[in-house]
Length: 286
Image (cartoon, rainbow, N blue to C red; front, side):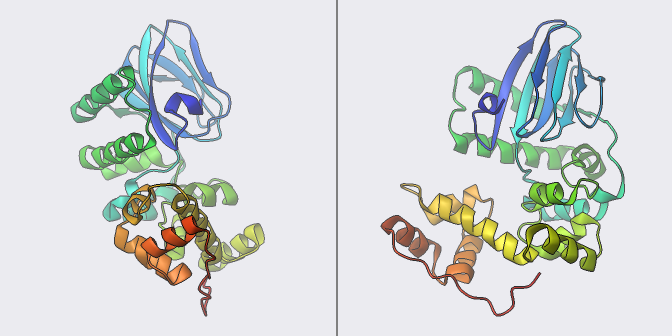
């Protein structure tokens, strides 16, 4: 299925399903939003079974699930796959998630495809047919734009109910961390808030699961990401910052905190094969 969304972290697929035919993915590698452009389907995944999704509406499919979509009539869907939302670029929305997302269990729900989102999907559909969505950078732009459209055109409680499985303390602890550390934007306190656990319980469970503090683990993940991007040819600090969904200023601060150098100098050293010296923090934090 990953290839259907261009084998990137995010992407789109335009799919036609004939009446009574089934579209299936036995182990989803992405989260999916299934948008019914025309027709009707019955969908099943680990969150719900045999639920109807009507024309002009969209539904959520979790990552790491079996997904089965059966067409009731001839149907066209646009499938949006992603590994993380961009809601964290909207501080007000993120704070709302932190406060409300873990308080209720998920129940199946759909959202209407509003006219603005429908216009966006028409443009994305045209680009898919013209084979213009092969580059990961274009997919990331549409990913960002799609979630900003959701924030602009839907109510906070609608988005929270729809996306609750992504940010929910009900998942097992390791899955919760893997699915939500990007939403917390590297902030341990925010991750604790999202988990719905007490600070002491969170710290104890994290150390038992990963063998290190949350701060140490988050730094390792961020370091690995930065070094992977820095090794690519013809890349600059602004491009890495964009890929990691942060400002160039924050990227530079991270490089200085972790290695004691600017983003540009880090890239130069990585590409030249020069050794990097990690900055030792006096207090690793939790």
